[in-house]
Image (cartoon, rainbow, N blue to C red; front, side, top):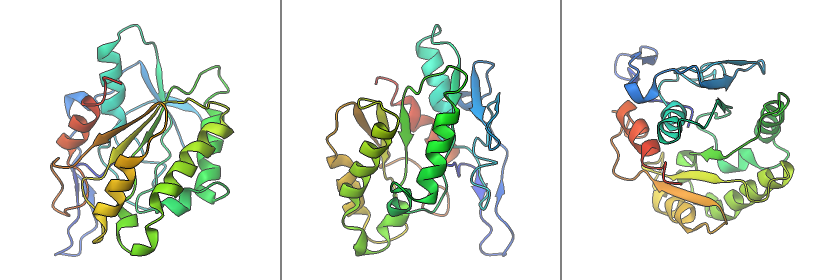
Length: 222
């Protein structure tokens, strides 16, 4: 979710990971797309969307800009879209449970986005690769459902639309368990987009720049 499209990890040479800087047309900036920065101010959105959020990793192209541009292309009267990036790569679902640091940070940013009169229209969620490493995370479905319900409850929006992505890959051998959990969640106003089969970066884990745009454009029938 934080975006690794175009990020080259030179694991052989030992060089630091870098982003190639390529931004496809579907991820281009628009005066109608803003982002909430790390210091909680609205600025013009552009890739990498999570540059000041997921600060411990090299970020590149993610699904956020492609999604926002697709919404505007479908409905030119939609108005201004405010994206609130909150993703942190390499985290497990238990790290997003209510009361955790990441959950508190998520809620702080979500509530801050409402202060200028906006409304939260949906949650975009793409997570789970790190939960494929050990079988201890077989309760993934229960934890994910609880997270979605807590988020809705705390925003007092019980039917908030949620758009989640089912994994295309994973860090460990239990990808099937996590994918089945994601695909098996049955909540009102939740749609799951299956990323299986989309192209991956050479690390075999993260979606390529092109795949990020494809996955979100496929979702705009919601």
